[in-house]
Image (cartoon, rainbow, N blue to C red; front, side):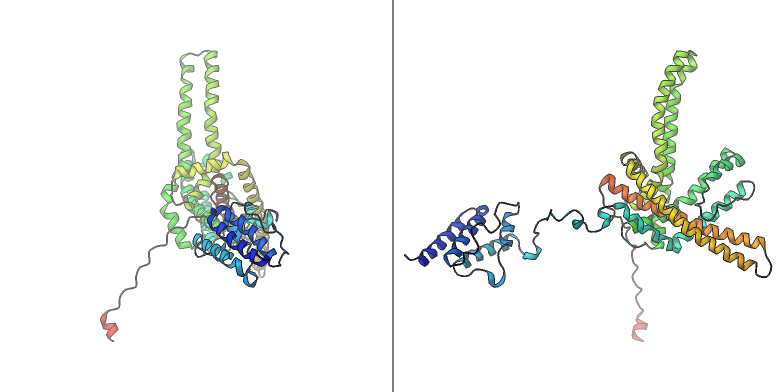
Length: 436
């Protein structure tokens, strides 16, 4: 038998051998037989073993046939039946897929940054830089401005004298007035006013937080009407968020007070020392609860409008978990948010200062009017304060999503969207209108 006849016989025997062998061993036999056949027909430029080995990957069956030549380069003759068998088997295993749709595997030699989709995959805090767009929202800034004016008016009636506003380049806060408020009105009326201010500011905070969370998730600002409906439907549950830590602290303090009872019965220094040690140990959980509430309550308010289930206890647990499980992440996000607020505060302060100068020039053209200039400066200051406060509340929503991703692994893009309100059908036209 001549050389060409021997090659034909080798191809037939190799084809039958490949078909009868188990599926996991077909690729190795195919490539080995293909190299021998090419050498028989004078194409020995591809030595045996030049093709990728069949056992170098988990996806052996897929990767073997991704190396086959395409188009006119596909070998003809004795290898055609073998390639047809491979094509039919692959089509049966992966129906509806072509070569471009099959994953070719990761290239781990290309570097980490080449596999990143965007910078938020490397540094998630970059999402916070999207939130300053909320400063251009008239509904958010206007709502915060109304709340600032209402708070200023309420405190002006309760505290003697006029409230002096902060300079235009500083973030104004009414927290420093709480001491004067309690001194001027007493503890009962002062506590009532604090409760009124909480009821006033909680929906405002949640409204702006929802917009900031949407921006940090890469979504557009939600419609004001839909956000107002969402905040209004969850307002009464949100009021329990600042109340629950207070109630838990009071309950724990009552239990700690019971430890002191033996010292009333036996006025002995030894008993006082032992009960003092016990009181100190029992007061630590109260400190953990009270200090954590400073961070957990704002984060819980953001969670109430970002999660599908408005549960105050679950929202508070998310806030405490963010603080005590990821303290470094929380500190970094708060520091970066504070830097953004200060940076935009300088810019907004410059805008306010230029506005005050323009108002001063206008009010002193014909005759100088000090009262008019003071009123104009107060309005400009309130607008600047509302701008900065809006940015701070928007950053709170973004920080919550980042901490949720750090603690629970849920991506920031997975922001819950409230269901759209049902669309009422158009009324049917009367028959008279159709006939006419």
